[in-house]
Amino acid sequence: MKENPYQDSLNSLSLGKSVDYPDCYDPTLLQPVARSLNRIPLGIETTLPFHGEDLWNGYEFSWLNTKGKPLVALLECRVPVTSPNIIESKSFKLYLNSFNQSRFESQDQVLALLQKDLSATAGCEVSVTLNDLASNNLPVVELDGKCIDHLDVEITTYQPDSGLLRSDPEQIIEEKLVSHLLKSNCLITNQPDWGSLYIHYKGPRIDEATLLQYIVSFREHNEFHEQCVERIFCDLMTTCNPTTLSVLARYTRRGGLDINPFRSTCLEQIGNFRLVRQ
Image 1 (tube, helix red, strand yellow):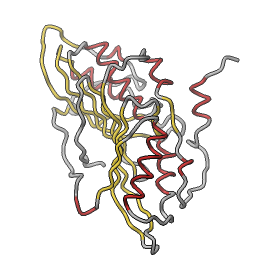
Image 2 (tube, helix red, strand yellow; image 1 turned 180 degrees about the horizontal axis):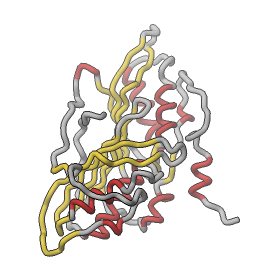
Image 3 (cartoon, rainbow, N blue to C red; image 1 turned 90 degrees about the vertical axis):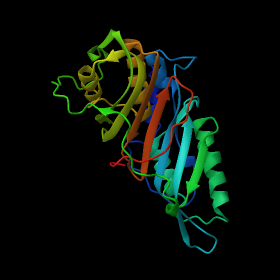
Image 4 (cartoon, one colour; image 1 turned 45 degrees about the horizontal axis):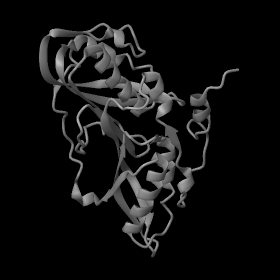
């Protein structure tokens, strides 16, 4: 039987399996997934067609000081798209939980461990910050763009189909489009992943009705969050031929973590904020 390296990699993860929830610091809980396993089928091999990052927010992060008193903080982690690996989300949650009953000399020590462990898992340097709850650094905002969810479209496809997309090369425009109807499923557990999608592009006008049909077509699709966004980016680039394109998905949190993958033809870093469902 022909070997499937993608499936072999998934089988090695704790995802979808019954596991203990340790409360003592353990960096071995973190599990990487090679980005190449999904990028190669998309035709992405050596040169990436996008810039960007995976922005994680952790809302349930705590540890003990040397006197045993709990401390809490909001965690922000930015993983570059150039990293060879994504950080598997369940292992990320287990890892963060492992700090709960461990004592540390200072917040700086905790931050240094997070930076070291997460960078080792991603395979490159990631940015990690710990923010005080009183700083209110994550305001609730609305995405800046035209929401297309009101469109009265017929939906018949619930697996990604780039053939649905249409654009008009006679109309060259710049616009920002938003949909809150993005839903895909966890690759192993089949649990729903809910998200809002932001698209900013310049180029042939994208037909809004077909774009909405395409977004909804992910509804029964099983794939990691980061992979869904890269698929959407590649499908829009190939089918609609924009000159510039940015795609941001902000997913609702699970287990105290949300992930917000960003892919763009432009070299920029996204600001951090929360949507009402986050």
